[in-house]
Image (cartoon, rainbow, N blue to C red; front, side):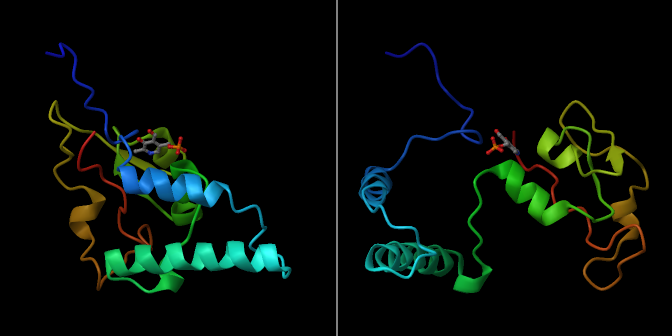
Amino acid sequence: MPTRAYLDWNATTPLRPEARAAMIAAMDVVGNPSSVHAEGRAAKALLERARGQIAAALGAEGADIVFTSSATESAALALAGRDLASAAVEHDAVLAWTDASLPVDADGRVTVADPPAARCNWPTAKPAWCRTCPPALRSAT
Ligand SMILES: Cc1ncc(COP(=O)(O)O)c(C=O)c1O
């Protein structure tokens, strides 16, 4: 019986066998999806199929799916240039874009009595400090 349990599945998770097989198959497609030659078109088709599958799973449109190289890049893409408040326990990738860091208690809950978020009647009212309301408060860590 294992004596150690790995619980940091927010960082890395074991791959489902079908996901692993799909990734390995994709690595054998050598074309640049931005190229117009046959190899590039094949790579583009694979990429667009994946985009469609992800969109369908999320109930989104393919155009809504943006592939990035990392969570840090995704955070930068979403948060750069916004007036942002976030919890002090956020990842550095979010804190790098944070203007107001909100304190948390021992359970990780934001503790300020009147956080900017409380004054922000999202999604209808967007005060100047909050062009987008705090988009990244952790639900788990
Ligand atoms: C919440 C959170 N944001 C950002 C990152 C950074 O991820 P990446 O190494 O993909 O940039 C991590 C990494 O574990 C994370 O847990």
